[in-house]
Length: 140
Image 1 (cartoon, one colour):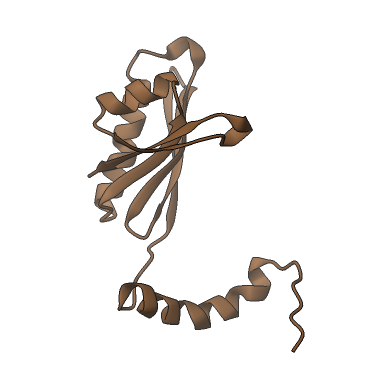
Image 2 (image 1 turned 30 degrees about the vertical axis):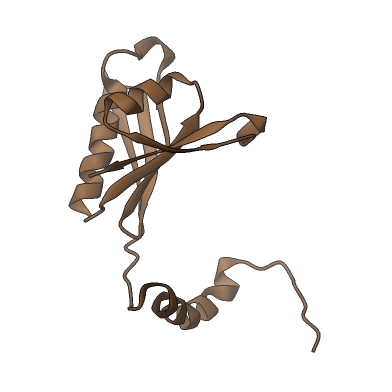
């Protein structure tokens, strides 16, 4: 038997995934599961100008925050907090049980997330651009 590995795309492997994931779910979870995947993007505006945004996804009952950014001249006004609370509310409404994210070690964001009740789980050494990052989670 000769195994050949080639580049593919979602359209090509969609049928394979539909057929095979139920078997993997039974092996891993002991039951059929509903992944309920949804993406979200929320923005904050002041005087019709975007001053912040948060982007992420809900996957398998866990919200992942991909990024949160606030305009450099608007930090400290509670924009980041409101955006994060909106993501948490989205998660609760979709039956998520926790929120997961990672940020740079030593960045201002660490203290920000800690104040909002997020707990550090682990350090990822030598990660993006060879910098250490930190994983945070919060039960919601």
